[in-house]
Image (cartoon, rainbow, N blue to C red; front, top):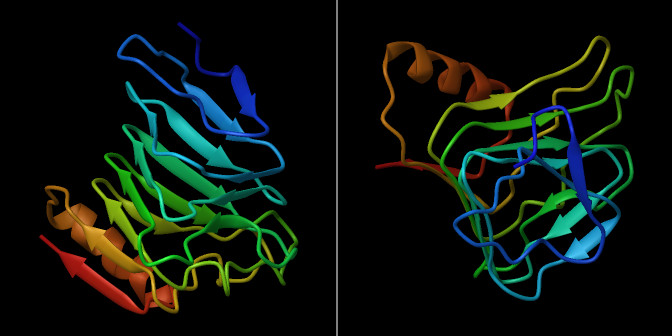
Length: 171
């Protein structure tokens, strides 16, 4: 078990996990191009910090917890869904954000295909004086597959009003 506050960094591949895998904070360091399906189980959070990249590459990624993507002004970084077979399923919250004072940070060009399935809240956060282009989809389908109450629907609507979204679906 790993306590929250401590991070495990992955530099070449996401881990192959089992039911007992208990890492609270999982972080992509550098560029990882997925070569097989991967799961972050047991409520873990996957962080893709500014300047780092996770290319889904036609694979399936299940995050049984939350996903936090911090985009930067480096083109092609963050979460990259550019293959029609890309599938990222997150059972919890999904957050796209930018670093403070980084007004040119954007995910533009990184979300052009595949599907992002969201089971919790979806938010696009901005820091002081930062852009609102942390989530720019030109082809990635965002599938809302959670059970949402009025508060969550309002938060999603507010996030979608700021996000540039190609296609959203709900189940």
